[in-house]
Every structure is written in structure tokens, then in C-alpha cells.
Length: 381
Image 1 (cartoon, rainbow, N blue to C red):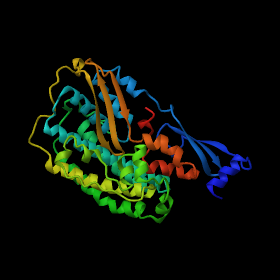
Image 2 (image 1 turned 120 degrees about the horizontal axis):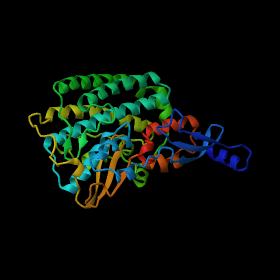
Image 3 (image 1 turned 30 degrees about the vertical axis):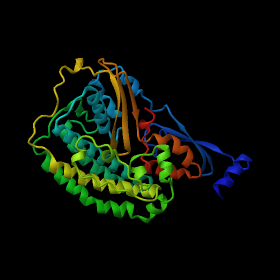
Image 4 (image 1 turned 30 degrees about the horizontal axis):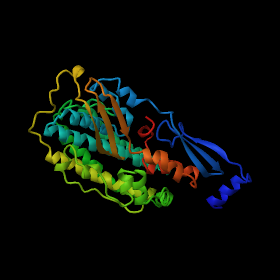
């Protein structure tokens, strides 16, 4: 029976519809969020995002804290990929204050951004594995992710919320022996990619389950504001690192892939390509790193008295999910006057969910979310 026929039956009350809350405690929900689904049998008739369960008022809290104090708050906006928040906020402050960071800072920030991208990709691919029943694959990928977190802990003192970047620079330099050990781990991670191909991307069950789910054209993706790997999976090349380079990216060779198709399978393959590219990019950063330089921050005086000149700016970086932007307004005081965060999951999590979930089955919802890397904190802050 077709989706149209089911809808007509529901309208005529020949079949009963019921409401299903997908989240906030559903294992397939990516965060404390919920979709209210109207369902006939196992087929979704309509979907409504239910916001407010996760809202923590990040942007309003930032107006109450000093410029430097916000560094401990903002990584929590996106748990799986926190470092873009640090870098983009610092970039906005530095642009308003006319601060030029040392070359070594640019490389350190770029390195941590790509490390964070790697951990996010591993969690995303692992989530997609779990949603298709491949829990062993997810456990293996999470083990690889932990290896990167070990090096984050060695470098920053923290595994998840690193609070490594500060306005004008970073908190510390690379520890002795860090680079040599990290190169070994990157080689190990690259060696595992053929295993991921066999377990996940070449798996006929996965290919059948993902094919045709959440298909979107390039034109529609651009119109609704889809960014990052989701946009590149429609065959369109757009990447902030390439289009508006920042930090050390102008000095790096970026071979950013694209994938045709625009469905969940294309998005999964796109992430697989970008994961391999990120590992190559990390090796390139380590090869070009300015080890001989010693300066890792600009002296901005007492952080409790630091002021940013009046003005406003929009800074953006390319996170693992796409363009991550901060609009920052300063009135010349000790605190931000206004901060607005533009997370990359906003179009998919809110708009596309109402467009694409109807017609899918209940067990497709988690796959749809994982394929689009929907991160509720991006839009329910």
C-alpha cells in the first residue's frame, strides 16, 4: 500500500493513527531532543520537531560572562565536535580586536580541528553502524576514537571539552614525544579503513537499507541551507576551508571529495572519503608544522580586564558537519553584547525532518538522522 493511499485511509479514519515520541530517551535519538511522529502501522504520516528539551540558553549565558570565561562554556554546544566552537569564537574576537596570531598557533588550531573532525566522523560512522544493527563495527570505531581522545588528553588535559584555544592563541605547546606517537596512531587508523569498508560500506545489507533514504538534490540542498558533507554528497563542492581559508589551511593542499546521489548511502560514502582525507591532512599538517617557532599566544594582558572594540562580525569554520558560524557583537565592554550561533544541523534537523520523514518507516528515522549527522544542540541550544 502506497504512502498516498495510507494517508487517504487515515483521513477517512479507516485506519487509526497514533502519535509516537521518537526521543528524547530513544536510543536512536542524537541528544535530548524529540520528534513527534504521526504513524499508521509502521509508516510515518507526519513529523513535528519538539524543541525545548535540550535548550540550555548558551547564547544568553555568553552575554553574562567575560570574553575569556566563555571558552569553558562554548565547547558544550556540540559535544561530538567541540573544537570548532573554540576556534570560530576566537576568530571572531581576534577579527574585532585586530589581533594576528602567530604561525604556530594557526597550525595548532588546524591540527586540533582536524583531530576533532576525526573523532566526530568515527562516532558518526559508528552511529550509522549501530542503526543498521552492526554494533561490533560501532564498538571498533569507538575504540579508534578513544585513541584520538588519548592524544587530546595528552595535549590539552581533557578528552572531550578541551578548552585549548583562547583569544590570541592556545594554552600550551605540543608535549615532547607527542608528534612521534601520534604519527603511529594515524598510521594505525589508516590501516583500519579496509576493515570499515568490508564491515560497513560494502555490506549489502547496509547498502540496501540506506539506498533511497532522504534523497535530496543539489538545488534543493542549497535552497534549504544544507552544508558540509551532506551538501557534498549531492555532488556539489563547497567547503569553508577551501572557499574562505582560515588558520593554516591556505598553506595546505586540500583534496576535498564529492559524491553523487544525495541519499543516505551517498552521505555515508562521503563521510568515508572525508575520514580518509582528514587522516591524510593531519599527516600533512605534521609535515609542515613550524616546530622551531616558540610563540603560542599574543599577550592580551589581564583576561579579567580584556575588552573587545565595539563592532560586529560573522566568523565561520568548516566543522565535521559543515559551516559552523558565530555572529558576535561587542559594545566595547568586558562581555559580548550578543552572540548568535549557526549550527550546520539546523536545516536537516528542523526543516527537512518535516519534509523527508513522512513516508519512511519508524526504523528508518534513526538511519535518516545518522546519515545527515543531525546534532540537536545545533538548533536547540
